[in-house]
Structure formats: C-alpha cells, structure tokens
Length: 310
Image (cartoon, rainbow, N blue to C red):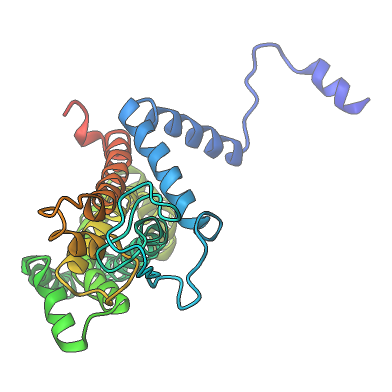
C-alpha cells in the first residue's frame, strides 16, 4: 500500500535517480556494444572464444599423454604420416609426434604463457609507473631512465641472454618476456597519471578537501588504467608470437607440445612435401595473434579518443 501510494504521488515526467551500480552496468553494456559494433572485432572475439575453449577443454578433445600433458606423444609406427591417417587426423611429424596433440595442448601452453607474461609485465609496470607518476621529482627521473634502458633492448636479445645463462625452459621464457615487456606498461601508466592529475575533476576534489591518498585512489588511478587494458589485450597475442619465435630457435624444452617447436621441426619437411607439420601450428600462431590484435584495436578505437578517425 505505501509503495503504491508513493508511486501514485510521484510527479509525471520526473526522472528517478538510478543507483551507481546500474549506471556502471549501463555504461559497460554501452561500451561493449560499441566495441563489438565492428565486424573485425566480432571476428576476433569469436576466434578468441574458440581458441580459449580449445585450451581449456584440451583433455576432452585429445587424451593427455601419461608421460606429461605438454610432452608430445610419439608413434614410431606412423612417422611423417599425412593428414587423415587413422589415429592422426592432422598427420604426424618426422619424429612420430601427433600434430593434433601439439595443436590442442599447445593452445593450453600458449594460454598459460600469455597470462603469466602479461600478468607479470603489468604488475611490475604498474608498480614502477605509478610510483614515478605519483611521487615525481628525482624518483620519477631515476625510474624513467631505467625504463628507457629496458625499452632500448631489442625484444629477442634479452630472452636469448637469459636462455644462455639459465638454459631453455618454459619458465625462463616467461621470465624473459615479462622482464622485457614491463617497461611499456610503466611508461603508459606514468603518462596517464601525469595527464589525469591535471584534469578539472581532480582539482575539484582537492578544492573540497579530499585527502591526497583518496584522490589517487578514487580519481587518478581508476581513470588511468584504460590504455593499460588495451595494451594488455594486444600483448596477449604478442606474447604467444614471441614465445613461438623463441621456441622456433630452440629455447623451448625438446619434445614439448608447443606451436613454435612444431614449426621448427617441420621447416625441413616442407622441402620434402610434408607441409602439415609446420602449416597447422603456424596457422594457430597466426590466428591467436590476429584475434587478440583485432579485439585490442577495437578496444583502443572506443576507449582512446585520440585514435578516432584513424
């Protein structure tokens, strides 16, 4: 009865203030629709879902090797078998490795690689970038010189040095890529903080007496993370591409179900006409990198107004 009376007494045409949660959900839904309004972004998102599904449900698609999930099973009775061979739909390598197993379980390994590398790079980059942007002064200058040093190192030189010292392994590839990629996140978040802290709403927060910590927590940091999210999406594909490159030149564990390793094993087979050994894993690397780049570009077009019209 009371609720009905209140509804009856409400003046027509008077807007009801929505809750902050509903406002945030509405904005998120609007941004999502805008991001996926482009056909290329939708294609990238569909491919990401399919690739992630293959990685997550790998045990349901191909039985796990008892000797190790990421170790290629060898069938010496079907060496260099072409696609369509019984028990080996995508063929085998010249060492008897099942290409389908390498594709499916390589997807899970690539997913782990990209998550570990991007998470480590973002974590370290945010710590350095936030410290430089918030503290400023000599601390900012010192940290940015360190960032400049890491940005000046060619992408593959540092991983090669780590592999030479520590030896080839999945963990060493993750560490090498995270260490070489964190600097860009530090530069991005630092530049965003310097820009956001000069905005009018930050000045207004200072004027009404908000504490410095409160302004940083509520106003500066939440409005500085958008470019980081875009870059992280792009690097999910870039990390797998770099990881496959390092595996191709021999920095992965021998016999591992890894796309770059399969391409490396199959490079000599192309001349002999055994195209399937390197073609299928190479296609997977291409699709993984392409999909995350398409989605990252779609996010950047919507979330970064400076790219509008490009």
